[in-house]
Image 1 (cartoon, rainbow, N blue to C red):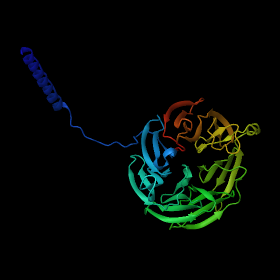
Image 2: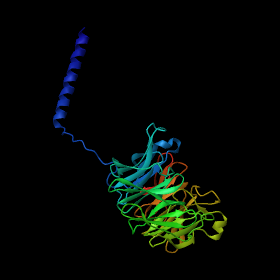
Image 3: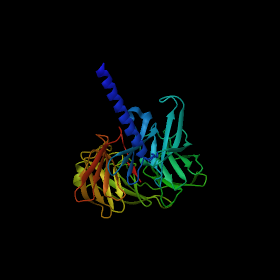
Image 4: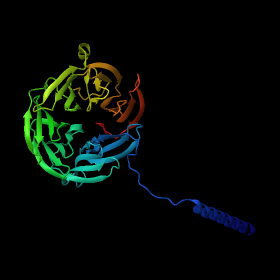
Length: 384
């Protein structure tokens, strides 16, 4: 009995002691103010990496990763085969996508979603027709012209484009583009774009104020679509887009004039390398840094017909001015590459590991700074 009383007294003393300590601590602690931080903090270098999530394709993602550290910053759902693109000023993300009201079945709704690129918050949506291309993520299936127009690739499989007025938040209609694919903005003209066509020509379209095709021109044959097709990705220097071909040639096309014209072509490979089957491969096989005059290309040996999506065994570096190779980097099984704004970092998607490889290329020897798992089927890299 006495032991029970002593235990009760001890417990009571402990409770009193902790209560006193808690009251003292509460009196000293400042009142907390709750805040909400942006998803993309100042000082980070966000990379926007689309993932078609091919094993559950109605549930695509746009992953946002810090290009400095590989740290994961956030994610936006992109629905069924959504195409994403950063706005010209980097402040918004456009996503052309679609949803079924029963997940994988039911009524379909196609829209352009507009998201804040820093907070990753939804802003508004604009209706699309159901003709939008339901394709693997490619950069030029969704393009912004100037500040007003957003152009969306269609495929039914007949090819056309939808024109969106970003200011009025309205779908202005469809422009037929038979046999032509992808949308290449002309930087010097905010209402004009080009497209590669299946007969080797390039079509240029100029929009009027209503978003209709006011002018359309077709070039001479500028590339060989059967013997040496071009990868759909092109990187611009002003109004000139640089493409690489399946067999390892660079073809530059000038979109500035009334008609598109070839601005030059040259080979990435020597005669000996060509015999050994060295050629580009992947989904985003080239990266261009204009300031440093460097072109990076994902290359593989032993290539041939149908090997154009093969991951890189090596990434080759070229000087644009001299058209000479100036270096080779590890391939990292890359199917997509991009270069930082400062030109000192190369980003690569390792297709085998579904990961991002961040490589410092500022010194004499490349150095992998970080790697990070990114989704399931990442296929592109976009940065501000």
